[in-house]
Length: 382
Image (cartoon, rainbow, N blue to C red; front, top):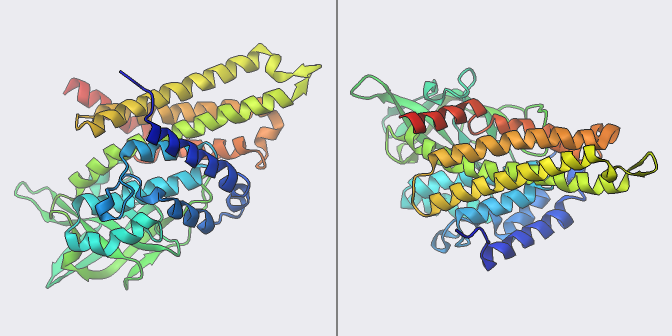
C-alpha cells in the first residue's frame, strides 16, 4: 500500500497551496469581516480550472479525479474555509448531480459555465424543521401539463444567492409510490424563475465569506424537462452525492486542522514568555503534537475513502469515518490553536480566530456527527 501522491497530484497540491498563500491569505480576512463573497478569488480559481477538476475533458472538465478535488480543498482550507466550501459545494452539490444524472441536453446547457467557474449552482435538500431527516421533505412539485409547479422552502443552501448563481436543484415530493411512501424527485430551478425567492443571507457564526440562504418556492413553474434523473429517484440520487461529499468535507476539515498546526507553530516560535519562546514549553509542544496527530490521521482517512471510491469499491462507511473523525479533529484543533494564541486567538485579525468560528459547522453540514455514527453502525451491524 502506497500513500505517496503521484507527480500530477503533488503538482496540483503545490499549485493550489501557492495560490492560497499568495492570493487568498492576504485578503480573505477583509471579505470575512464584511461578510462579502470573494468574486475576484472565485474567478481566479475558475481560470485555474479548479471547478472542473474531477470531471472528464469531454464535458469541459480538467480530466482529474475526486482525489484531486480533495487535495485542492485541503490546501484551500489551510488558509480559509469559506473559499474551500464554495468550491466543494459548487462541484459536489452543484455540478456533480447534473453530470451524474442529467440528460445530454441538461449537461450541454449547464456544465460548460459550471465547470469553468463562471456560474455556480446550489443543492436544495435541507428544509426548515427537518434538518437531518431529509426524507421528511415537505416541498412538493405537481406535474401540470408540461410543467412542474413547485411549492415549499429550503434552508441553509450554499451558493444559492450569488450574482453568478444560475440554478438550484431541489428535491420535492412528486407523488407516492406503490407502497404509499413519498416519491421524491429532483428538479432544476433556474435562478430568476418567477416565484423562486432567495431570502437575505444568513448571519452566520462562521464561513462568513461564503454564500448561504433560505429559499422559498411559491407556485414556481419550470418545464417538465427540468426533472433531473429518474422520477422518484431524487432522494437516492442525492444520498450518493452526499456519500461522495463526505470525503470532500473530510479533506476540507483536514485542511483547517493543518492550518491550525501551521499557525500555532509560527506563533509559538515568535511569542516569548518567561524569557523564552513558548514553543519551549512542553504544554505547548504537546498541544501542537496532538494537533499534527489529528491532521495526519484525518488525511489518511480521507485518502482511504477516496481510493476506495475511485476503485469502484464500497466506500460509504469509510466516507462516514473520514468525515466524522476529521470534523471533530478540526473542532478540537481549532480550540487548541486558539488557546495557544491566548488573547490574540480571540482577535479576528489572527487566522485561528477564523478557524475556530469555521470549524463547528463541519460537525453539522453534509451529515451531522450523529448521522455519521448511525451510518457506521448500520454498515457494521446490518
